[in-house]
Length: 133
Image (cartoon, rainbow, N blue to C red; front, side, top):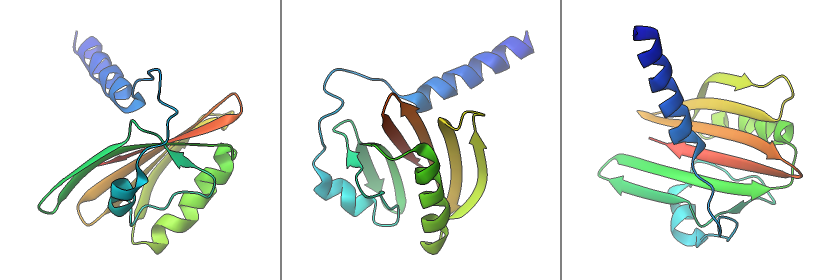
């Protein structure tokens, strides 16, 4: 019973981080406000933020979900973040990848903030989902 509850909780969290895809997802977002929020999280050249991205701040707490789409291979994107994030004060404390290299997760932290970057390849597009908590 406990195993089933634990499995259900893990699946629920994965679905939460996976997000939803709805018609119109591929529209570019208004990048002004989000770009301000992402000042310490770089975006690889050629990637566009989608309209389903959002962010919120309250005092020293910030929360956001940013969806980006581009054409670079996931291994390029992963290496980009592996190189860029520590230069901006982020500590990479865990990474996971599928054997095919078409999906990876990177976990980072900085001053009480956690950032999870999920990189997936679908057809000829690469999606980046950045969760900040």
